[in-house]
Image (cartoon, rainbow, N blue to C red; front, side, top):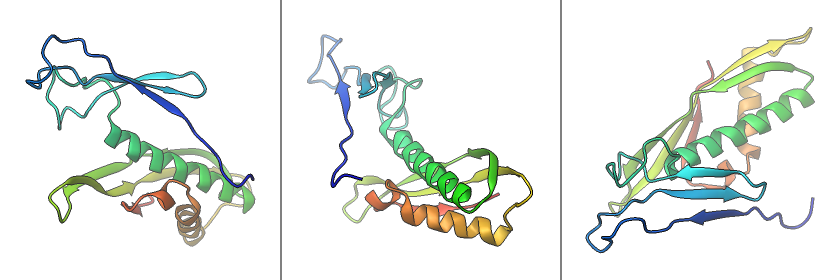
Length: 156
């Protein structure tokens, strides 16, 4: 692997409302990724009420939760395959919690991963082996290593 990897996203917002300084403007925007995919984004409607947010769009907090869960999934699958196990399905109902930090600023303080995994094949992991795979996946996940958010796995 090279010494550095670069990932790109373009975030675009354009004022659509006549008022701005009063705070009465839409915060809806788009995320465009280097592969060409563009997604609607917005602040969470829990943070900024509609119509100034778009509840149907992705918000940064849920994107962070999804990024942590996705990275854990990909690392877990890599490790499981390397250990000789066959994973047929993996679904995670991940949940992020926002609290205030010492300075009173909101932050995503915890993410709980709740993976449900379906296995097949002649060699299936024991619960202890699955727990070890999750622990290794957490230690090796690029995103988990990049955040100070507490990440916990509650394997089902």
